[in-house]
Length: 386
Image (cartoon, rainbow, N blue to C red; front, side, top):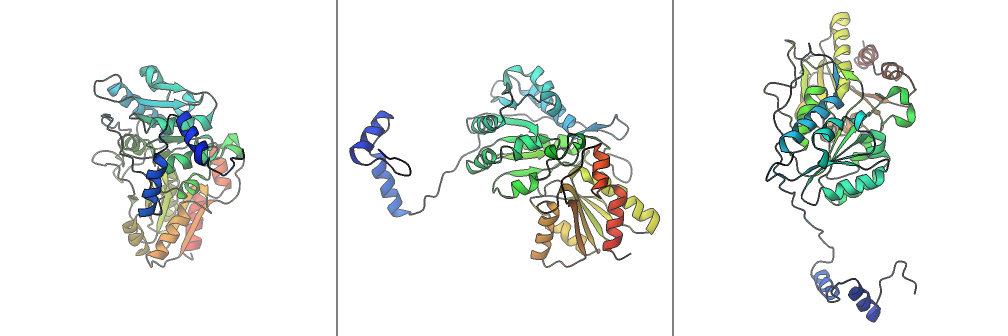
């Protein structure tokens, strides 16, 4: 019989349901439900109570050996794993890997919690599906992968994870232009744009190792799907004007909040995650060479504009955004649209990736794209008409 696009009818349906161990009467129930509500409302999934203890954050200081966000993630993950491994009343924290544990920094977790570590090999599509399904079965599930593999390559699987309301935590490393030598095929410059198409998944792009640690612990305590995106290179710890770690002390990660790293009165720069360091370099140039005091905002949640931050910035003059992500679908376009909705009108420019990047040291690749500190300072001066 021809079944494409057709359901079995009559006796064939009854026999098929019996063969599958189902109840043929379910069809009549479904028909009655459809009569009262023509459009199915779908299902509601309650997040599992895992009992996971996410511990206390580590603090990295400017005087410490420079590290990268992915290493801060790995250290926090291993700490959480060790605190909860085989502890009574705690559901497993399953960490999935596709032969990248050394690069994505899950190897330490694997050595401390071997029964919770799942080595899936190089099969990202299957892993995205399996990890998403696991997160709906009463355990915490985390998958760490390079940006191009964990989202771009498996977008449909991640889209289905969002549709099915899974609780998968996906940690993407090597995003943006920060994997310079691997070339344009491995530059994940579309992750913000891809996740703009979903409706339930949260995205966090931390600014430095301290914020990464706190975002990791937050993500593992947050219901629903979360993606945390990080680069590869070592970063300076973001500090306040007294030299103390900015994302430490009383700081607590809050989804959707933009953080004012430096105040200003002559305009603002909104930087996506790790681009904040380059924005601070631009600010220093503008201050020392041109007498301009520009505010710098670290945006870690690009899918959720901070209205208060946008209003404050618009009151002070021109707004420049910077990101090592496609300028067509990234943070800048989101903030521009939101400012229009809020009725905010100031000189505005979004800087970002405007063509496929080159292959070379990440600093050189970023500079060639016009996203290093001096280039950002020049872009702001032009925007301000200086």
